[in-house]
Image 1 (spheres, rainbow, N blue to C red):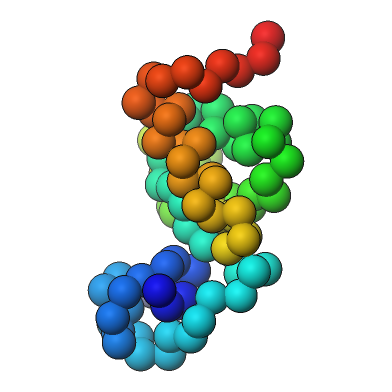
Image 2: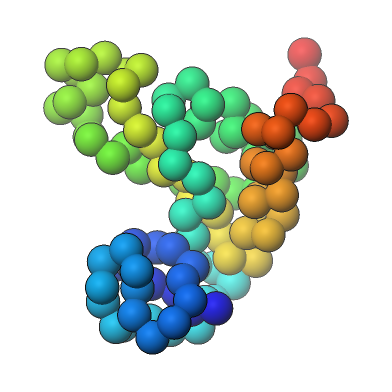
Length: 107
Ligand SMILES: [Zn+2]
């Protein structure tokens, strides 16, 4: 498993399939890795789930604030990033959550 510092994603192979760059390195525990790309509402739910599980999480809007103002926040796509040492856990939480399995959000 390699880490692309441009895309902030975990990738396989000698080049990044997302941006084509070859500047890959082994991931460090503190590297933020992209775990999900979601609509605004889903990203808010997932962020809450990570907060409940004490997983640090950062987000980045794909289109940026300018587009959001014009088109409305619901059309934006949000990328969520978690540290590498919580990545597996975050991925499992995401999958369980969107499969509708037993991840219960507190009231
Ligand atoms: Zn890349």
